[in-house]
Image (tube, rainbow, N blue to C red; front, side):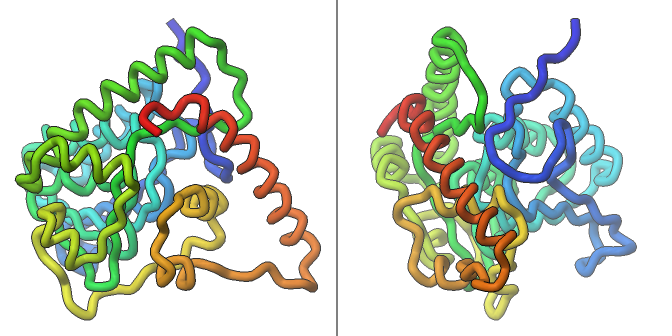
Length: 270
């Protein structure tokens, strides 16, 4: 039976089943061990009913990691929560030790991936954010049956995320659920104090720019409580003398409005 076409959930330049991660061999990495970079949106296409992309990720992890230690560097505003949940399961089953290091932000679905690490590190200028799972479907026509299944899947995903966060932090599930519903942003210090992270790396790498990545910018702009310092570091005005970029910016605004309407319909716990 053929695989259904993946659902595009974020406007960007990626192709279906394209890797949004990058492995670096130990011989070529700065740390001297295998590194896995997650720099950007977690899948512009949903892993909903996708069996191809998860297999690509798992196969590459086991091949390059070879059962040994892996350092995963994260700078991600989030993305497809289904992809993040499946990535976490794959990483948890991996026999070697995975250390996750947040260099910039780990927001939304990226936190699900981050806590898969045995040790969770954050550079001192980094942020974490947790909120209720939602699905953004970009310019796709979905029927009532599909939307209903997505709603049920999101409820199931939150039911799985909350205990995972509680186990990592030691907080009650009720408090975790409230923090998610309130879209809670945390500095590195706050993330360690809450128990989401284990270690702060002083003087670490600052937030890396992803301004050329349309999906990255769209996801970040969709959040409500983004810290002002982070908005300042990520924001870049469109040059008045660049009409092509100005037109693209206006198109993204219109696309985001359309996506927001559907997001409000399928979001479960708002």
